[in-house]
Image 1 (cartoon, helix red, strand yellow):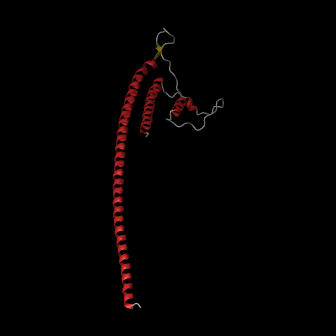
Image 2 (image 1 turned 45 degrees about the vertical axis):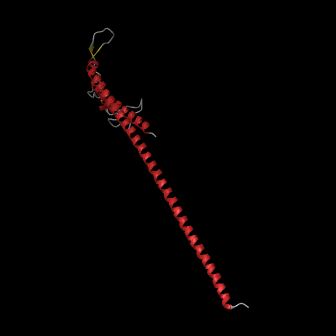
Image 3 (image 1 turned 90 degrees about the vertical axis):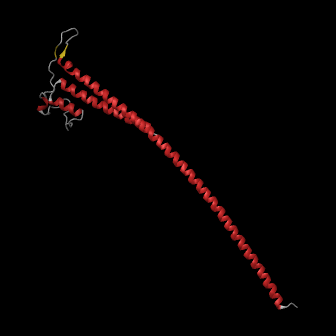
Length: 200
């Protein structure tokens, strides 16, 4: 028959062995966990460093490309601005040349080839004519009601009076107005060129 203390001692030894196995297993698991955690942390830090490096490289490349594009657009803007100044100077010179001819072309004429020069007959421009002219160029409001062709004449009688405007006055105005229109057209064309050049 077995002795009770012997059983207790064997049971204690078995429990102690199991405890030792459990402690060893826990220690090994904790060590493995620690090693795995450190390994994962090192890999994560390396991946993060690589990501930061790649991001910095992309940002530097994008900044370089943006700077190159800005330089290109600045050069284009300078070139277009210079072209616009040249066009305006040319328009001003051409307007000046045209204005120098106004007196000559509005004071004398030839009724036929080879005929002697004669004074240009006076041309009457009425207030109505001047009103239509100014309305067409936006210098005056267009009258709200305009009689239809062939309708009874209900227009203001003052429209038929001589406005005192001479042919030279009209040419003087249209040369200035023409220069303004050509300047605006040149500016619009340069703006369209800029827009085309700024597209990615």
